[in-house]
Image (cartoon, rainbow, N blue to C red; front, side, top):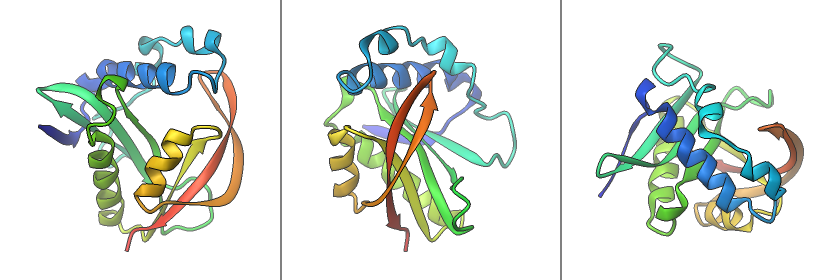
Length: 169
């Protein structure tokens, strides 16, 4: 059975392992293999701030199964400057060994509920261009691509993302 809870400081490396594995499997064929092969969980874990600041602008929740972290989602206020009422899903990843087990659905539900509880009325997220698996997942949850694209940098890689939006009402 999957449980979703707030991430804590001690979760950093386990979340980073999920993050890296998800990139290495999910983005293979979209991002260059040499980039994916050199990703290290320790590098990613150093950037997380779980449990370090009270009332942080971003919140991360982890999905656990038998006390093992198998996925996570990070949410907060949208950083697009378009609306103070818009929240954002900054990251949602599930360990590839656990794909197809509805863990992503549990995480996106928690994300939407939490953003709504934070008084946001709508939400946005970005999907790596070419990631049809993620697009299908979000579309099934009622998200709609709005035609906006942007270039981002993650792990030293520039990539194009497409924005999806949905109401939280």
